[in-house]
Length: 146
Image 1 (spheres, rainbow, N blue to C red):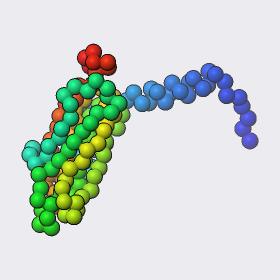
Image 2 (image 1 turned 120 degrees about the vertical axis):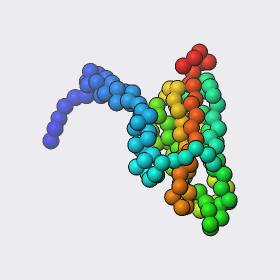
Image 3 (image 1 turned 90 degrees about the vertical axis):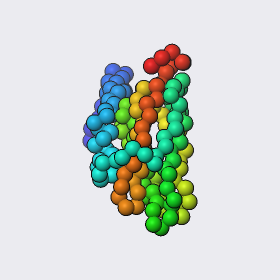
Image 4 (image 1 turned 180 degrees about the horizontal axis):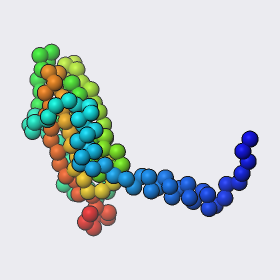
């Protein structure tokens, strides 16, 4: 049995350790590695549309819409959509899976962005081909540049 007292000093040290660990950011390289571990191949530009504001005055809730141009039939459809951010603590933001019954390959989400960074969306088609789009979002604090 371990006995001890939680002191203010040990509590503050634990909180500081957690805060320091959260300061780490993904990089463009770690974002590429995360995407490459999930979607095998080299994505081509095209078919994917990524809409997000150029400037986000509040990084806590940035609206993002990702859509993929696809007929969504048994012959050709979007199988998986990966969304990543290269400045957050972890590069992976979301993964969506589709079938031909989805009818449309489009998602709307709100993401939390820790700083100015690039969002990347990669669509994996049912035949294995990959398409991508990216967009930099400038995150400001109170509208004062970032």
